Image 1 (cartoon, rainbow, N blue to C red):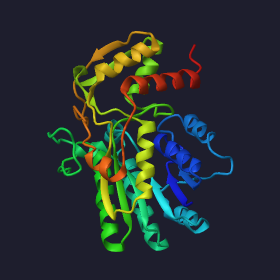
Image 2: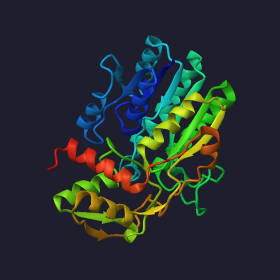
Image 3: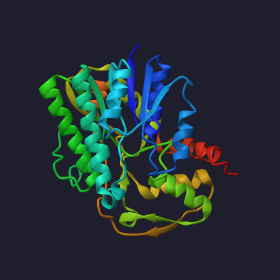
Image 4: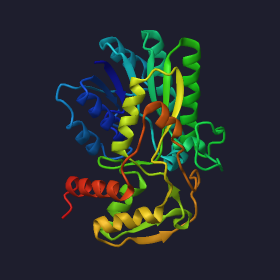
Length: 317
């Protein structure tokens, strides 16, 4: 069993990956800065699912000295770097937060891996890196040099930085491009979470691109095995798509939510927003072949599981 540092342990994907690692018997050391981008109470509630002896550091990845102390205090075999400042639209309002959290934070981690001889670095990238790509589905072989949001640009920077550290110092770096991950314990800033709250309150929901937005919705319980598999492999430097490999119109997603919540949505249609892309769709052939990645959860079942969790967590009658 290994000692694995998980960044963003109080976040959506980070918490679920860390829990799965604990169940497999690994020692998890967690870092999170518990920022107020969304409800901190939800972040702390996620941690209640962990073993009480789990070491969780409330620290910022941009603080090199604090991060170095964590590396010195713990014997770390692998780094599972999931933490990031998320959100496409928020990056238009607060660009410097993304530069600090995503770029400097990742650089600090890679540099400390170099200093401490840690050769396994798995990190979260995003489907956003495909930017203005016109080819569908998105393949890891596609050109990703035309990001359309600052968030996407930071994620692409992370990939390039990881490749550099692999090339120079032999650190095995695996990047995981997540495609619209949803499910229980999800992020309140994401559309499906906002839609659920609005539908239950009878408030209108905003459907951009006049409802024709398409996303490759990927259920959290399907994503986690992909993360764990990446931690088990040793490929040098590789990038993988972790998506459901289906592109679904947002209108369809809303219809599933309406069914599970037993309430109609009040819809407002609007244009495509700056930084958004009209469609995402993952080519996962490489992930299947090299990670054994195989999503199994259909949209209706995934939304049903999310709705059950949401009603329980928020005590919806």
